Every structure is written in structure tokens, then in C-alpha cells.
Amino acid sequence: MSQPLAINGGTPVRDINTKPWTKWPFYDKTEEEALLRVLHSDNWWYMEGTEGKTFETEFAEMHNAKYAVACVNGSAALEVSLRALGIGCGDEVIVPPYTFIATVAAVLTVGATPIFVDIEGDTLNIDPTKIEEAITPRTKAVIPVHIAGRPADLDGVLEFAHKHHLHVIEDAAQAHYAEWRGTKVGAIGDFGTFSFQASKNLNAGEGGIILTNNEELADRAWSVTHVGRVRSGGKYRHEVLGGNYRMTEFQSALLRTQMQRLPEQTQKRTENAKYLRSRLLAIEGIELPKEDPRITVDAYHLFTMRFNPEAFGGKSKAELVKALHAEGIPCTSGYVPLYKESIFATHSNKQGARCQVGQRPDYPNLNLPVCEQVCKENLWLFQNMLLGNPSDMDDVVTALDKIQRAWR
Image 1 (cartoon, helix red, strand yellow):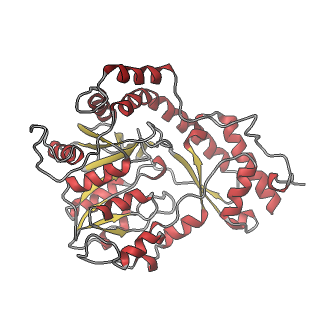
Image 2: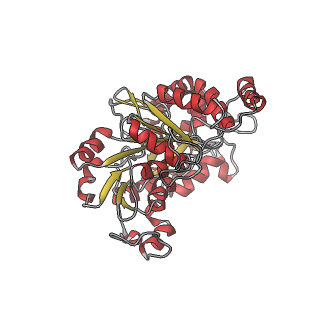
Image 3: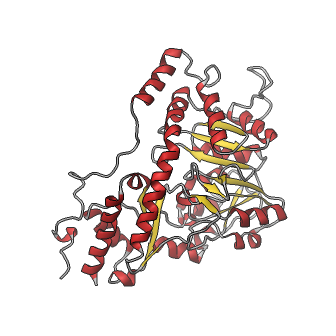
């Protein structure tokens, strides 16, 4: 006989009041000392201080890139990258539909047109085999997103990008320290962008950074970030249209300390994710992302899984999420197809659009079947949960098993 579910008055698998999940972020005296170091330096501004410039160098070195430009957040990092590549009105940029709004909002912000390409159901990343059919004479770039910290198929993306002379901007907002074939992501395309928002594996509350191995592109990104100045010019010499996208010295100091924890934390997430995967194989109706030997490090910003409603009594994803929360397992249902957001209906109708050149895709009537299905079935567990121990992973499996038995 199955146990009564917590949503029906039963005892939860995990009482988060007595057994809370691993807190996030981690910090100690190291962070406090770093902030005080900046406070007492009297140099709180990137242009006069040393923390920001040092962080750029250290992050680039950790991620196998030659150059880095820090900025206010990951959204700005994408916008700056597009502007540095000269992408704007009338241009098209290929993007996946399963991502945070910032990936595509940056394209709209510079006046370009997002062209959605479906994803792979077993990776949640853009499907490289569908890129070529979306390319037109106006296509200038593709933005593969490393969803959940799992590197996208960069072999496939780069093959078509090089064939059609497209720029590649890696959206690595969730993929700090992740590797593709032994090279850190973000250092493989023309640009790589990262976020340091509070939920991210490397966290300063907010913040972002742009990586590249091209010195000219690095200088362009620096100029856009620093109100159009050039590195060799004076304070009031502005050669390009830019903005003030600089990161503060306080954020940079925090990130330098947090970055010291990143390798160990990544290893911990990887170990727990591997253990959790092995345990979930016993749960009928739970499908896990495929393993790929080309991914030499997965950042595991999220642990993702798809569920088959038939194996859970025909219940919906929303019902499963609610039941898991009641059992003490925090999770979320993840993204919806991005083209269904109202901003894209507005854009299709040419309301408030900055640029009227080129095609206006009928976003509201777009249907990318893999993305649509994934959004009905996919669940996320958060990265801090993977910083616990195997018994924490056992609770996830126990809760799913308990719910499945009750609903069958």
C-alpha cells in the first residue's frame, strides 16, 4: 500500500525546516575581507581600481580565453557582443526558443530579428541540423545557449556557422567552468557571455562578462561597454555608440573570491548529478539528458529531467511539481516556448519595433514541436541542491517513487 502524499496530509519525504537544502551562496571571511579591501581603497570605480581588471584577467585564464570584458549583467553582455559585431537593423540572428528572455531580447534591442530554431529533446540545446534551413542572406549570427550548464553541440553549430560565414555568440550564462572537448565554453565562438546573477554558479548578485580570443573584437566590446571610448584614447574621446555597462569594483572583488570555490563546487555538483542519474534510472517514466563524451565538464547549473505523464497516472507537470514541493523537493517547471511571450506578438505586429527592415516572423503562430513537447514534460532541480550529499539525492528519488506509487 502506498504512503499518503504530503499534499493529501501525509508526512513529507523531507521536512525542509529540520533538513534544509544547501544554502546559496557560500561565503565566509574571505568575501568580507575582499569587500572591505575595496571599501578602504577609495577606488570603487573600474576605471581607477584594480579589482575589475584583475578579475577579467583571472576569469579569462580560467576559461581558456585571451580577453575578457566585464559588464553589469549577462543581458548586457549579449547586447554588447551584438553591437561589437556590428549587428543591427535588418540583420537576423538564429536563436533557440528554450532559453531565458535575455538571449532574444538582446537581439531585439539592437534592432535585429530573432529567428527561432528548434531544440534537441534529449539535450534541450539548439539543434544544429536545423540551423541551415533558417539561414537567409540577412543572417549574421547564431547564439547557441548552454542550457542548464550543459554545452550545446558546438561542433555542429560551428560547422554551419563557418560554412555560411556567421558569427557565433555562446550564451554561457548558466555554464561557468563547463567544457566542450577540453576547452571551456565561452572561449570557442567569436564571443562568449556569462551572467553572475544571484542564482548562477558564480554569483555576485548581478554582473556579467564577455570572452573572446580576438583582440579586435575585445577592443570593440570594451568600447561599447565604456561609453564608446577607445582603450588608447582620452577620457572624452568617443568613437563608437556605447553605454555605461561597467561592473563595480565591489562585484569584481566578490567574484574573485567566489571563483576560487568554483572548481571544487563544480566537481561536487558533477558527483551528485552522476549519483542522482544512476538512481533515477529505476524510476519508470523519467527520461534524462543523453550523455555525450564531447562534454568534458557539465556545469550543472540545473539538473533537468523529462517525465512521461502516463507513468504518473496521467497527471500534469504542474501537479507533479506541486506534489514534489509538498514532499520537500524544490523544483520548477522551467521555460515556456519563448516565442509565445507577448513581446513577440507585439514585435510581429510592428508595435514599438525600432527597426522595420526585413522579415517579421509570425511568432504567435510559430510551432517548434520539440520545444513545445519539452515544455510540457521538463523539470528542473536547482544547482544548490547538487552541493549537498548523496542522501539529499536519495530524497529526490524517494519522493518521485512515492508520488508515482500513489498515482498509479
